[in-house]
Image (cartoon, rainbow, N blue to C red):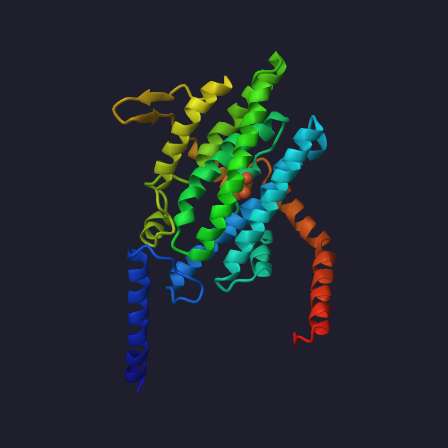
Length: 324
Ligand SMILES: [Fe+2]
Ligand SMILES: [Fe+2]
């Protein structure tokens, strides 16, 4: 009896898996109501949650400078950018909800340290020039990572990324323009821009994740077409994009080994300090504690807003005769 039941269950499962695999092979999208392997769903939830968490934690280092922006124009730009990041978090939490996981659950995991956000946001923004370096390098690295995600096999994630990438490209440009203004300014302003680039360059290269030889999830994610390029490929692409931009900026990238390799048609660059990367990942970066504490506090202080919004929505529903 058990055997018969197992066979009956196994048959449609095999058909579903075949349909899933042929959708991947044809490069068509997997949608929320489609059958998908549990591990595919779990991988997407992990990645999209980490991405959403990074968007909202990433608001902190930049919001740090809103009240100290040097002009009304700069303040308006920075406020718009930080607000965009909140919006990115919203799209991504909503996209993750289509996989059957609630926003509350994801936020609880973030606050309990059970899900990660990008390590880059555990570095401090020490000067105004850091706002420029973050825009140019951190948002720039994010775009390099995220443009291929617009072709990710999971439909809601891919569509969210299209809009996010458009906004990220504005973020990257505002950072670049800010650094250019400082670089062409007084000697002290130029030095401040150079110092920011010196501090953000290596951490931004780490944003692409560990080298391909050590990356645990990569192969399966590539097979599922969640990921389209390896960590090292994307990192190389980013370096090649940044070198000519740094020249226009009149700033130096802090890597004596950085040079054009004619044979490879790409830039060679120095070794990344992976010990630092793993330390920050383990929670020992300069701001890990501060970021998560601030996030928890903001969440607790916002409880009344969520309660009021829920009560309002329930009231509207009742008034319109809906059953809740
Ligand atoms: Fe963003
Ligand atoms: Fe951004």
